[in-house]
Amino acid sequence: MRNVVIGLVLAGMLAGCGGGPTAVENDEGAVTETGEAIVNAVDDTGEALSNSIADAGNTIVGPVEPGPYDDWVGRWVGVEGLYLDVEKDHDKGGRHYKIANHYTLDDSGTFDGVATDEGIRFTRPDGTFVLHHTDGAATGMKYLADKQDCLTVKPGEGYCRD
Image (cartoon, rainbow, N blue to C red; front, top):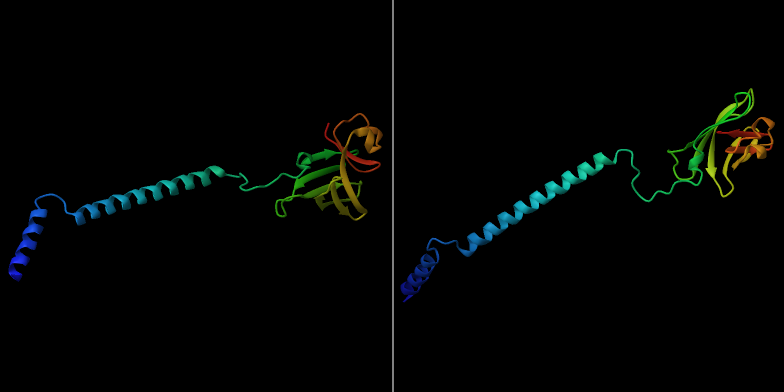
């Protein structure tokens, strides 16, 4: 009897193998196709990510707000060759600036500045100042009186662009 059962099982198995794929073969094919699809998707994603990073160049990534005084960046000219350069301090980021300033005929330096509600505050050997936007008349300097786009350090000291 045992031989009959074994024979029937073998006959059923052989009948199931009648040239068509078995359930196991179907599963292996599906696994192979799924695996290939995953590999292709990972390759495509990696390539897209690589291209995005290459395209980013110097783009800032993330929620970075420009400082309120970023339009002050650049050179501002005073009288008798004096100047004030405003530059973003990229090492410190955010609301920090570098102020390169030739502020008397004999004195110059580069000073750390930080944005405040009133302007950019910085300290140099002769005191702490808040740089603020004015016109030429507000600088208190006759030579700059007709200018429209200026930064004033203190009364009698200003720098303009136009």
